[in-house]
Length: 260
Image (cartoon, rainbow, N blue to C red):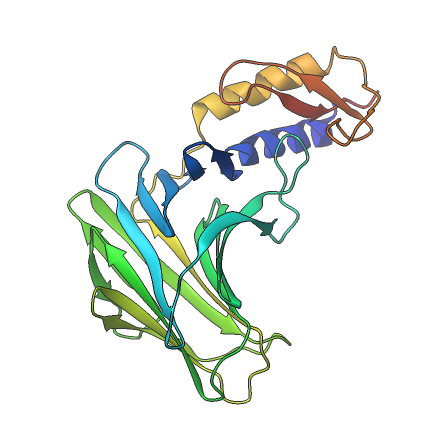
């Protein structure tokens, strides 16, 4: 058995649950590593434990003094070349908010929440975020916060900010009515400016999902006995890929054909 091939197939299957889902109910994320599920409700992002429990609502209210009205849509590829079992890149969820963009990216390390600010004041940019369903406790150093509810705790941390040429910008969180604010020192910054904290679940088990692991073994076994397909359309697999149907987490799976 080609170990590199098997590792590639297993990695793609493990990443598949992190793909943005878009259906009649709206946009949804499932995060197995963090034990979280998330969905859009209007122009808010609602996060809850996968096992059930009260949700925490995150909504950008104001960006640089402007009311942040927006609508959700499928966004750009998540950086890093992450791809699902079809070979499609993992997609962000974007909110177009005037000339600015807010986005969410779903990865094993957490729900990455970010903004790309097209323009802003020459000295300081401010983002105000409403938090519903949880108490907000901002860290004393301003680099993170906790969203605490009766069903658990979410961490909102890893705050970074940088400008168009990649220069790091000082940024900190502060308590605000109904949530928190993020302040970015933009002295000398070249816009657009990117702001990027991450949501994680405190005490997340981070254990591999057993169904996903079982599915990986099943697909690997099927792919070894399946002939290589010849793609005929944009929806077909890439060269060297075979299509396998299975029940469970995915109804249609592309896996790389095992090299001879």
